[in-house]
Image (cartoon, rainbow, N blue to C red; front, side, top):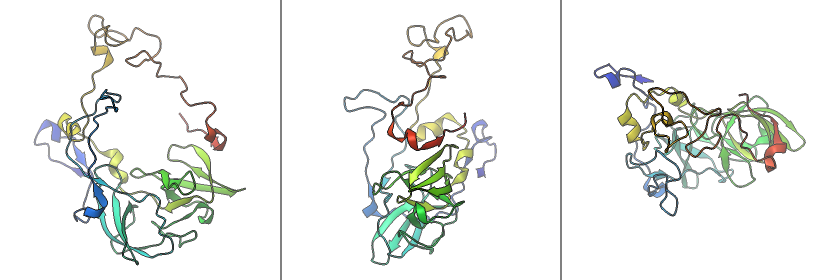
Length: 274
């Protein structure tokens, strides 16, 4: 982590991630695209996610989550920053000349060799079927549906632990603590994702949130009664309602929101601890 001298009140506690391990190379033009800003609005232009808008301009890096260039050796060319995600990314070049962006692990270095195959060497960054990964190894970018590409465990510092292989399924312990089964023919990448210090970042000032595209959040208790269930009252009034609620009166605390008939419920061995 990088800390700053308290030259201003906002700088006193501000921290940023140490980017010294990044290459400093510009992103590859063939692998970037422009994404129009939605600012939390749907196709009708109505705000469906509040507190979004503004922020610095950024280009989207097309990440290869499938990594289906099998049995072709690859070499890491650069390790780069991605403004759309918390983990760092690595640009790899395959022996056939193809280039792609993948998620970088904590131990990746420029020049490292990688291999994506049903059965590959047990090395950070290599990708293979879960049934070929021994118990105790850390994995990320795990497939849930065969051939669809990695869908879970893709943010900074995350990993799942392989606990067991049994009857066509691999048991994984998720970053949340949940224990669930995944088809052992699905693919996963070995290692812990890069930038684990991301969780320790102190934004420091309101302006930095605006750079990130986060707009201000107004407390419900500071509103009028017409605007929020917590609004109104003299001074710092109590909530005035027995259960915590959203702006629209929906209960937020203690109500289960998961669909009881969801297909993956049978694959969950134990839910995360509260």
